[in-house]
Structures are given as C-alpha cells and as structure tokens.
Amino acid sequence: MIQQSAELSRVLRRIDTSVPHPARVWDYWLGGTDNYAADRAVSDEIIKLMPDLPIIARAERQFIGRLVRFLAGEKEIDQFLDIGTGIPTADNIHQVAQRVNPCARIVYVDNDPIVLVHARALLGCSLECGIDYIDADLRDPEPILQAATDTLDFARPIGLMLMGVLEFVTDDTLLHDAVTVLVDALAPGSYLGIAHSVSSPSMDKAAAAWNASGATEILLRTPEQVAELFEGFELLPPGIVSLPQWYPDASTEYTDREVFQFGGLGRKP
Image (cartoon, rainbow, N blue to C red):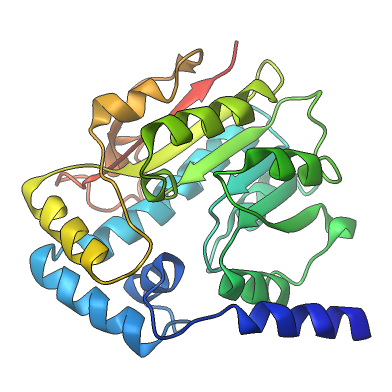
C-alpha cells in the first residue's frame, strides 16, 4: 500500500494542468468532467475553427464500439491491446468485449499521468479480471510488448487498437517503425484497427491552432497515408472510410455527413 501511494504521488507530480492535453481535451468534447481550464480554453478556440470536433470524438467512440463487438463476436478475438487509450469513459473496450466474451483480456496503454490515475481508479480491475494498464509511449513499443505479455498471449490472435493516437507521432519514419515493431509481434489472424484524423481545410486550421497552444503537436494525414499503415495486412471492406461509414448499425450517428476521422480494420494473414 505504501509503495502504491508513493507511485501515485510520483504520477500526480507529472500532471501539468496549465498546458492542454489531448486526453483531457477529448474528454471535454465527449462531455466529461476530467479536464481543466487550459483544456477547455483551447478546445473552445479550436471549435470556432472546426465546429465538428465534438462530433468527431463521439463518432470515434461509436466506431471503437462497433469494431470491438465485431472482433469479439464474429471474429472471436478475445485479446485486445489498446494503445493511446485516453481517459476511461462509458463503454470502454473491456466493457464492450467482455459483454460478448467475459473471458476477454485487455491491456490499455497510455503515457499521460492523468490517464493512469483515472484508469486505476475507474477501471476497478486488475490482472484477475483480464485487464491491465501500462504507462508507456507508442514511440517506444518494445516496453509495451514486454509488459503486455503478462496479460496477453502473443502466440494467439490479438486485436491491436490504435485509435486517435497516431496523429500525435509527427515523424513519419518513427511512426512506421513503431507500428512495424507492434504488428510484427502479432500472431497470424490478428487484427489492426486504426482511427486517424485526416486533413481538410477546417481540420488543418484546427490542427494549426492546437499546435500553437503548446500542447503535444499533431500531424494530420490523408486517407491514403493511413492506408499505408496497413501494409502486410488484408484490409477489410469498406477500407479506409469516414468512421460512421464503417459497418454502421441502427445506433450509428452522423452517417449523413463526412466526419474527418477516418479508419479501418485489417487482418494479419
């Protein structure tokens, strides 16, 4: 208990509430309360340039839910590695997957200290229920893989989730190298799911305002560049599309508009 308290204190000292952070801004757009004045201020300024950003956040949450239900159900995937998980909210991956298969195992990864605090407090789970959280960075994938083996069996198929995180790696070479290390560790029959903000005139203005705020920089990419990240995978129909167009169901919102967050799902042969 003393060791856990000391670790929590170290984590809390890493939190800087004076600088906007992606996870807290995303939480604000989703209607959450785990954000601060700096997050809300930059959020409101960016929304003036791109009013659809809260819609993008909600569309991504819905996309994740549909994708996980599809993998856990139709594809019988019972292991998930979610990198860049963000602040826990309703219908997290473990909740969606374990409703389909109570034995599903999930590892969450993020390098934001406030996400770590909320993950431990709100997830309320441990290795005993097949859920773990790793404090690590996508740009350094080897420690992620090493720690994830405590929960996941890399000899069997895994669903690798990279949702709204790749745009924060602005060096294309570093991004491709990191993704390559991750997917090379996956067994055949594994799946790669990606959601990525894409360029448009309004999104470009919003990204420029975000980068000027002092927050972690973002790089928008084209759908074609997102597709390149699936090299070596069988990209499932309908390919790389605006998120509401990926297997929409009766509850899917925003199917009548283009949402500038694109994504897709691929299978490792």
